[in-house]
Image 1 (tube, rainbow, N blue to C red):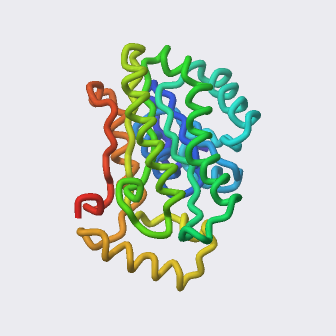
Image 2 (cartoon, one colour):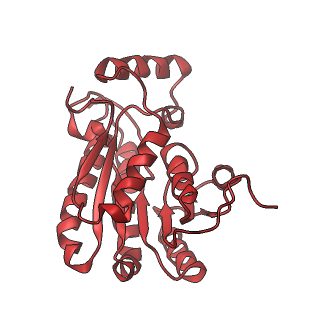
Image 3 (tube, rainbow, N blue to C red):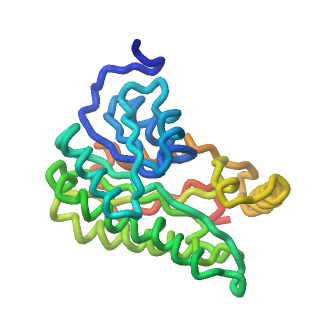
Amino acid sequence: MAGMNHIEPQDSRVVAVTGAGTGIGRATARAFAAEGARVIAIGRRAEPLKETADGYDLITPLPADVTADDGRDRILRTVRERYGRLDVLVNNAGIVQGGALGTVTPEAVTAQLSVNLVAPILLTQAVLPLLVESRGVIVNVSTSIGQRAWPGTSVYASTKAALETLTRSWAVELADRGVRVVAVAPGAIGTPIGEHQGLTPEQLAAVREWQLEKTPMRRIGRADEVAWAITRLAAPEASFVTGVVLPVDGGAVVG
């Protein structure tokens, strides 16, 4: 039986989204599918990926660990065998482990570097031949925190600031091969990332209050608002846009 969001694939593009089990990744996978793109939704846990794909015929869940060699191999193999092409890669998977200097553990540093920085580099490199062939697009998901000095998030912010540097560098490096590279920098967005940090409801409420104070629009953003920016930057109409980092943060960077 066709899903509730069944759509004939008018968009021939193939899109891979990492961290697609929840939040921005889920919203992005669904937004591309709603446009008619064929989407591979990647994440570590199978059940959330199934929920992402529920009702969306054009989304294929793919459990894979982007930090592992065999996970990246599985992604590349699946894309090649299922579609034979890749047009858009969204490097969205990320983790946050906060802590002021003096409390940061080596494990927290290593984990955030592995997921937020090393994995996008190695996955992008693995699928690059397909993106070159399609003259595709790489979309990196950063954070507005990477552009401001906000306390308690120095390691996370540093990994994302590095991802923005990669965005600009790759944009220049890959321009003559027809590949565009862009990024979005979300601010305070209503996603489960706080719960994934292990924050209590009280701690999360305190974080949200602080975020609201730092956001000129005085509200928390929605995952679909970030997904909209990602799909627009990846759209064929944005063919002359590369190397940009677009804040989606209610004015937090400029406020």
